[in-house]
Structures are given as structure tokens and as C-alpha cells.
Length: 237
Length: 139
Image (cartoon, rainbow over the protein chains, first blue to last red):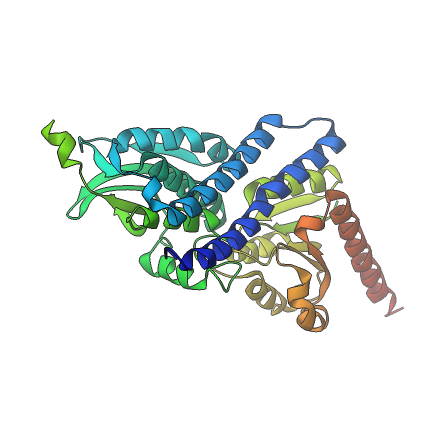
């Protein structure tokens, strides 16, 4: 994962397989909903639309991840507001969260100032990650179907991440998943019943921006996120 | 009305299957994971089980071994409906069929609701016939 140059073709094949496996799920959902609609005479078009939108986003984010790795020079870092990115991420995840009965919360309390990141890349990574966790939460049988998009300051920088009452979201699980990505159709067996493509797409995008996806805690919740560096230039202004 | 235990981790898919099976006149209990499914089976006493193999924490195969370890549940018809292509289980099909009592293996992406319902009816029919056969034996 995350190799550039000659490694990129291998990376894209592993990731492509994972994305292909993952895309079967929304397509199955649409097919079965449409089939039931024919039986019942009623089709929930809003649900089908949200499902299709989510599948398209995953494809877009995958393509962005591959492009960022192939041509990193095309994507300059800029000064970005984390709160704004988290808010927009929440907006993009709302339809999918509704489909899965997951409540989204945004915790952007506190003034952290801007960070250095590629805005589109950061948002795509968080959306991919959020979608994967939304799908995973009901299967984890957690007591609360709630996902929090949050930011906080750590000693390494400003953390932006997604958090839930799910103890399986650990560094070990993530590392094992990275190792198993090319060998297993379910590389994150303690987190997701799917190929977990959204998590690996997020990982790929973040690495292309010289960032890391890592396990993180926010208050009493477990989650995955990334550490961002404050934009000192903007702070001076 | 037959009681069906559906073990399906994906919520929207589970809803579609639940609706279709309920519409066909069955009582359906949905579980997302293996552990809750064992507890639900104890409570529901299902006439048939539909199982996905890719679950979180404990796999469907683990569920299957645990489920069949209880004497009362050894003859309950069980259908695997999974995202895992059947080709990956080709060498183990005899084990699944003979040792673990799997009646059918359906590849989820290629299985319509209609086909699932037909397989369920088939499974329940076999179960009914087996039950009648057992009742008839003493006479």
C-alpha cells in the first residue's frame, strides 16, 4: 500500500479487486429492492438513489486515490478548515447513514485553525472511511448505531476522524487488514463483513498526501482518523 | 407459518429478504452476527436457517459448527446464501452437505428473491416430509 512509481500498478490491482468486491453490495441492494418493488408495487426510489450515489462516490474516490499516487505533483497542499471538511463529509454521508439506520453526529467544537492538506483528497478519504464504517456498524451489533465525525488536538497535531462505540477499531486490526488486502476477500474480519474497500481507499488517498490512517480515540469512542499539521502560514496571516 | 432465522450482516439486504420472506407468509428473525444468531435460534426454534458466511468476528462456518453441535438443531434445514463464490467451496461441498447439513449453496449476487423463496419452500418441504416420515415410523 501507498507505494508510488512501480508499486502503483500493484497497489491499484489490489485496491481494484477490493473495490470490485465491495461494489457488488450496493448493486445487490438495488437489484433486490427493485425486485421487491415489482412484487409489492412500491419502490423506495430515495433509498435506491442513495445507494447508487454511494457506489459512485466509492468509484470516484478510488480513482482519485490512484491518480494521487500516480501523479502526486498534480495535487498541491493548501490551507484547509477541518471543521468545514467534516461538515461536508457529514452531508455526503447522510443518505447512506439513513439507509443503514446510523445516526451521524458532528463534533467540531473547539478552534483548531486551518491545516495543510489537499482538500478534495482529505474529504474523499473521510467519506470513504465513513461509508465503510456506516456499513459495518449494524454488522458489528454495537449497542448504539451512531457514528461521530470529530476533530481534536493531540500532541502530534490535529486529528480528524470517525468514531463509534466499536472496540474492533484498533491499530492491530488495521495493520492486519493492510497485510491481508491482497489475500483475503474479508481482510478486516473484526471490523467489516465486506472487503472494507472504503477503508483501503481512504488509506491510499491519505498516504498519497503523506498522511497516515490510524486508530484513534475520541472521548470514549473508538475510531479511525488522520493527524493533520496546522497551517502556520495562515495563522500568521 | 414457518419460522426462519436469517443471518445477514448487511442491513439493507436483510430488509429486502425480510420483506420478501414475510410477504410469503413466514415469520422471520434477522441477526447480523453469529453470536446473536445462536441466542435467537434458541428462542425462535427455527424451521429453516439462511446463512451468510462473511460475518464480523465469527464467520458463518464457525456459526455452522456451533449450530450443528446441538442435537436439537442437527436436522434443521440450512441454506447458505453468500457473497463468497461457491467455487471457493467446491472442494469442501461434501463436508458442508454431509457433515454440516447444508441443503443448498446460493451465490448471493446471482440469486433473485424469487429463487431464494423457491429454495426456502423446497427446504421446508424436505423438512416436512422428513418429519412426517419420522412420525410414521413407529406405526
